[in-house]
Image (cartoon, rainbow, N blue to C red; front, side, top):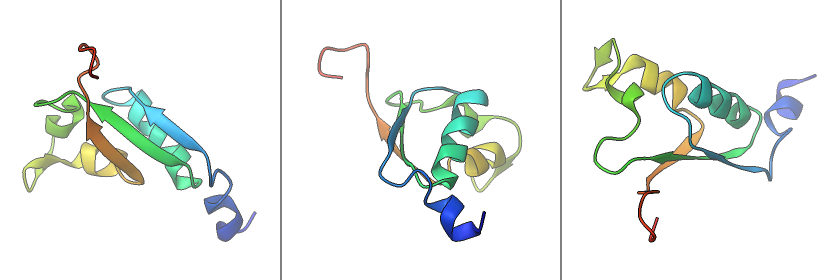
Amino acid sequence: MNNVMSAAALQGVRVIEMGQLIAGPFAGKTLGEFGADVIKIEAPGSGDPLRNWRLIKDGTSVWWQVQSRNKRSIALDLRSPEG
């Protein structure tokens, strides 16, 4: 499969990612690499714990920089009726 074909395999698919740390963000990143529109839901104020986990570069975890590519992030309080 060529790169153009694989990058667009999930084009038009929207994914809501609600996982934290490794497994959920990895799955979302992988789906995004295949063209899905991935929207990461994060808790207001703190965000995903992966943002501050282990190696920090320029104020953000290197893990976060890798796992958050190909995504959009929003803060949403799912414990409130408005969320």
